[in-house]
Length: 122
Length: 222
Length: 264
Image 1 (tube, rainbow over the protein chains, first blue to last red):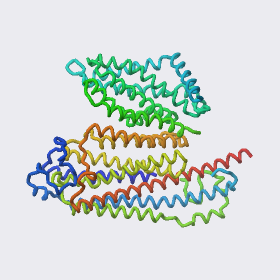
Image 2 (image 1 turned 180 degrees about the vertical axis):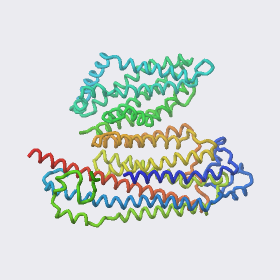
Image 3 (image 1 turned 120 degrees about the vertical axis):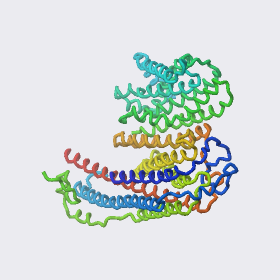
Image 4 (image 1 turned 30 degrees about the horizontal axis):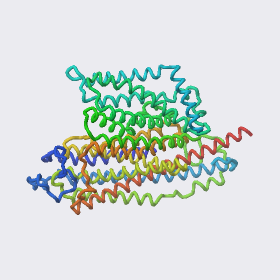
């Protein structure tokens, strides 16, 4: 149980961390205009809608293409390793559970022998 | 027939207990009044409390004082150790739920009657659109009493229930709170368009008036 | 005093149990440990999907024209949101099933789903504000989906707390289930209420959709990666809870036996 809890904690930490630097890296880049100021139908915050350039977004687009995270490759590698570690931990917990299960089976058989199957309690 | 009779008997018992020891109602009212006063202090600007806060203060005060009385709703049964007895009537747990919800509704209704004029007085506001406000208050109180009684009944045997009750109750009644505040502020401004919000409150009430006694019975069956 | 060694062949607690005949037991420890191959495969698949998704997001997807790099939060953010919604909704339905017809498996699964749902909800509630700071200029707005996520998370947390606080009894279990069932209609009404309240959340899937092919691939990789990962986590927790239930059954069996012996 405590292993799982630790694994979940790690998962949370890793997931959260995986979002942090993306934001931090962008802090140096020119900030996008706060879309909340104009929550119209032509809302530019529609994420992923990269192809249709709204008329309001007439600015130097090349700036964004050059946006690079310093040491981006290492960052990516770090995330991949982190997720692998988390998954490995969960996998190990699964394998350990099998051992606990075997012990429980053993224990229940002993109890059955001891009680001689004399009761209706399971 | 049986349900109505047993409910009436249980309700009469609770009313008698409440009438003999008036402290619970008294303290709840006192708490509500204090709540309003504290809110008035909190929202004081340039020596006068701001009128725009009236709906929020009113509804939050009602929510807070209703959770105060909810924590004591099943106290007579707990202290007398009779919870199992009143739960196992000929008609099941339904009479207990209805009588307790009615008690809670009466309690919060009385609190409202005291709090509403007080809020208007402290915040220098004139009561306009009385019909809409009353409808919202009625629907809101019914919903809060039903969900509140369910939460209170389910938490009877739970440790730290004083902390858990608001944690469960407040998110659940959030729709009532949002709609209630909205309707009240529209009504006080003599605006239009409270219909949708009142319908939402009505749907909430209908849903939980049906679901709560059922869940109560299911969860507490022996 | 030496530290008691806990092994399958000695029981530190009950001398009675230690004296139990050994013949059929010696075999039991040799029963090969059953490895849950399907679960490991599930975990492996989810890890593979997530790794590819990470690489795709970093290397293949273009930056959003308006939002720049910060838009890349989107893939894991929406994936976590899907996982959370799926977990919490099915937890609610399983709780209803458990209330209608008590079943240990439904209860254990509902509880695990609830816990995993909360983990993903916490992820969203962290990544969301970070992204919102870039996109909307503020960390938090009282916007429908944000409000709904917050309130639903609070409800789920309180149900988990309720299970932890109530005694390990049938009542506690049914009470928790009732709360979880109540959460579903409540969340729907919260959703309606806060929606009318007004909002600006982007509607990606319902709206124009994702135009860029690389973005679409990254999106679905992340979604399926996180969903399978949620499934693997749920399965792990589910097995945990099932083992706990088995342990409790054994203890019940033993104490029933001791009670009978004392009577005899």
